[in-house]
Image (tube, rainbow, N blue to C red; front, side, top):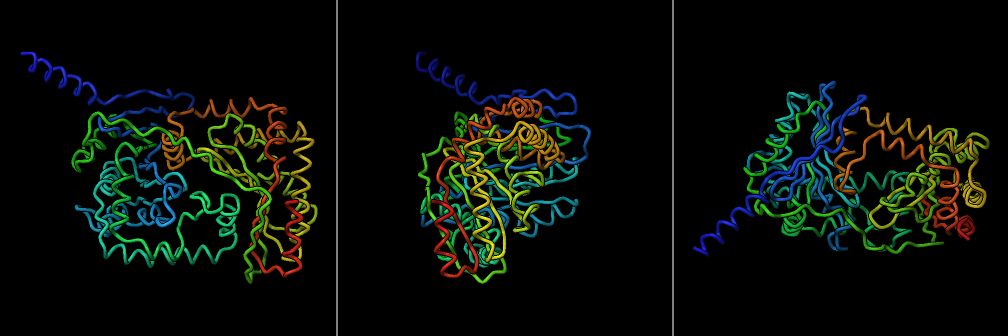
Length: 459
């Protein structure tokens, strides 16, 4: 009798854990969508943003894995796997996957970053069940066959070559290496020719099984979607694949980082016969969870975020030394980067670097004017809203927020946080970030005398 009661109690407890938990996170009003989250038994999270006024829907699955989760020998495995999940499942061939979405006029793609990967399809709202079935099948039933690994290896090597042929793109990989060295964050997302050639189907399969567990995934859908229907369809797809094995499993918590070491005063140069020299001058920035990121966003916008920014005005408008010049920020779980990019004639490199360094030093010491800060706040608010005008952008926002922060913020709240930034906030973060010793990455045909002077920019 006692044993039977114990078994009944255990069964009741298990059933309680197995109930899907649904929450309304943002109540839609003033044209903003309603955001809901359901956590399924097995730890799979599903977030949706419902906008009944549109006729499209974007469905995506975010995986809590990126290139920083790779060992040196596995560099490129996350991106390799992104390619392979399109190559076929137990139910569909590669042609079946692509033709299913093409046949309804949709689009399907994926991207890999340093801390996450996303697979998505954008379709008419009436074709959302098809998109859910196809993408869920890819994530849960990929075969990763030897012949597909061999075929896709060639495509990835071509992608690496394409990146190498674009120095304006390649210099960003170089800057990551300059700042982080031979750390996972410093290695390229695509991997290298050597690491990609060394990866085998067996190693990639093990990587897949380790990182594509439902507890590591977030499902996101935005547009004219019904949350309850999305939950039912996703649950059916994952249960059909046998993916929700442990009813008591809990979702993986947001990444907390590893206190990555960052460099100061380093210079890296890749000599290449290009028409322009491509440079990035930068320093450690802020982690994505740092509360000062709102002030950092305003600072970045005022410094190099548009045609009225300081760097654009000083380098391009007043002197015509570069066609493209801008600043940017990248935030990771435990650290961040701030960089200034410019592409210019090799003979102008030192002038461009001197002006950029002077502007950074001046803002670090004296801050920005109130007018510059006010203009940057308005620009940042406008670009934030305009950047969310399609269902793909909305899906990206809610999916990334759930995976990286474990919470959702409404657009109104985001605008309020930007508006609350004060001139003192911006000046404080400018002193902290811009006051650090920078590092420098350069790709271009610099002569020995020019190259020897590059250290002047980081002294």
